Length: 132
Ligand code: HEM
Image 1: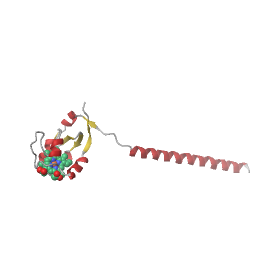
Image 2: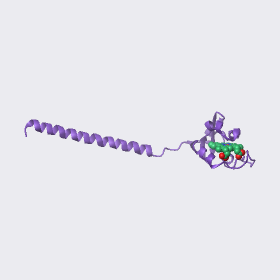
Image 3: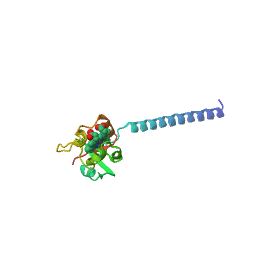
Image 4: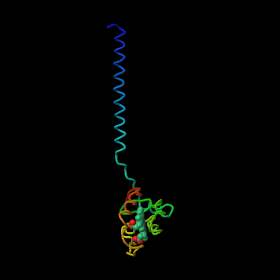
């Protein structure tokens, strides 16, 4: 083997090693990105005071069974008219679950919301209530 051939083989060897290292580093990064994407997002937490400050038709948050929901964009689509506004800034578990006020007075039919209503509610969740 002459010197030229040795130099050529050495170059090819170095390039191959560089390519293997580069590809495996790239794959590793992809793995990490996938892991980060799959990791559950930390749930946001809010205090009752924070929820209470979102108490109008244009900015309406509520608490139902310890979860916090932003109802603002749903209000105009609510089939039960403005009765939903009772929930803004408030604890509304009984209002939603039983369609009754906390002292037992019926709102509308006074019957619980349907499964479809629950599913719509799930999509409006923004976090969980913390008590301090
Ligand atoms: C928490 C305060 C709320 C009150 C007081 C309230 C009240 C009402 C009332 C009076 C009706 C008319 C039907 C009836 O009288 O039975 C109604 C219907 C309905 N509401 Fe609400 N609502 C509230 C919140 C919500 C929320 C947060 C959702 C969903 C995100 C929702 C979804 C619906 C749906 C889908 C209907 C049609 C009937 C059914 O599927 O149960 N409501 N609501």
